[in-house]
Length: 289
Image 1: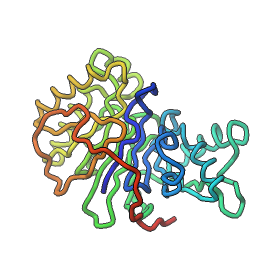
Image 2: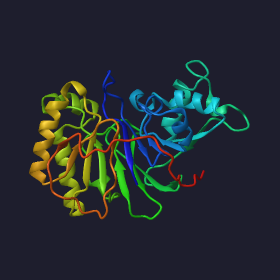
Image 3: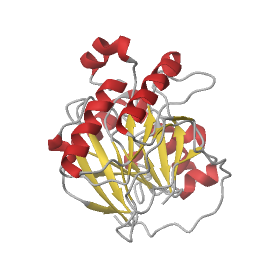
Image 4: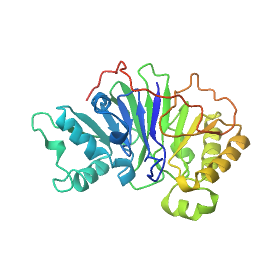
């Protein structure tokens, strides 16, 4: 299982993109920079999008993907909790902001909404996907994704504040992709908006290790680009204190899920390890649903 980071930041600039991940070229997690990062042929290979919550920077490219699917006579699943799907339908694909591609064309709509429920695993495109509530907006979930062999497992939190043992008890990832939006000096903003600082990540990882007796590999996304250097320095301290491997992600990075799930002690690596990525044809798992 290979995970390509399409975007890794909480603010869009000339050099940073909203957070979005791509698994094996067919499964996307969040759509902040999905259409803007992929060619039309690459978008046509997409089979499903897992949306963590309804905030703009996580759903922004859904209308663009929908239009491209419509023009290419193709179709894609958009999977989220029912409340998030309603928000997308009401505020984006509402016939005013953008056409209701969930109803167009009538014989095979370009967007197929698929509701998911917390803690209920579902098969999507050959992967087992389990939504798990996180500490952000009312209906926000992260997703644990397991490959067809049942071996490669990662958990993407989306936006979240500190996570507790109640969350971790449902998960056993080899790779954790999580946010760290603000450095310590903006802790009050992080608390108010339910985002992580390096300290919050530290507490979350301690809770995980106390429950699971190991730490997964960690990749950090959703950084504020104006404070990224400061955040990276604090993340390096967390990695050193815990003996953990924590990577600051960036656009176009590949994050293969390690096997077996025994993380090696290491340091925070700014933008590494990374592999350059060239769009390529891959064998896509059969899509169901």
